[in-house]
Length: 365
Image (cartoon, rainbow, N blue to C red; front, top):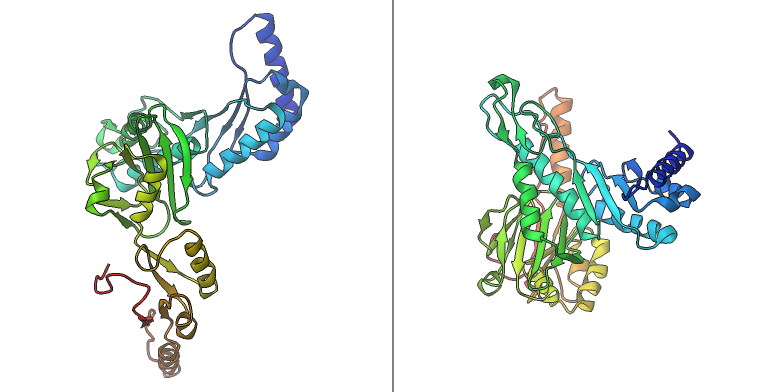
């Protein structure tokens, strides 16, 4: 299969449609994966003049790896370079719903498969994707399949169990309706967040795709301004929003800008994991008029001498190199004496609290 063959097929199908006077759209190039080079090469061909929709199948390791929202932005630039305004559809993508256990219980793998399907859809819509077709709407009742309707297991005679993906897809439709994407909020590399505008309200959808689960906490005054729903549409308390692989929807009558401010207020602390990033992070926070620690607590993985000289001086943690060296010596002695050395040794970080950059320092969270 080559670009030339792809173009020849587009031309042949277009000729048939014209001969039969078919009033239908012609979509292509239908790459399996979001292939920028292939899409660009096809759109550059003369046969592509008959395309009315640009399509691709955004299968990927994770919706954020590579990031589908970024990919949709790139595809839009490619389309507009050749045929400005031509719609972009994702015409096939999905995940296998794993085979259930004999008990018929819906396991974590099934829920994760559904969440990752939904995140791919949300990633696309957040960057202006026109349509997204999930693969596949089928009635296969049992075993491992791409079906969005049922899951099951041959071990229990194929008794069908509703697939969480079905409810999660319904929730996307219920919560987003025909809303337009307004902005993708940058909350850190492990998070994704997008705001959509319905006209009479706004909906933010957010999740944490990487790392340990966390919690987004709102003050009572802010929590009362949003209605929160989990990824299958159940209403949940707005004061503490779980941050994990499962998207959460926040509906609000606030403007998009005010909803963004509310979400950012729910982020209470920043941990800077590299001492070289400390001055950069502090400068950016100042440019954003974010006060430390009134608006945001900051803890740095840094050297104490450096942290004490920043503005403001930062609470920091640092590796305990003395204890690391001591534990290493003990392990070497045990190895040399044929004693069994422990596989894992826990060496806690040293903590330097300058008492300026962290609020609620007595709160363990």
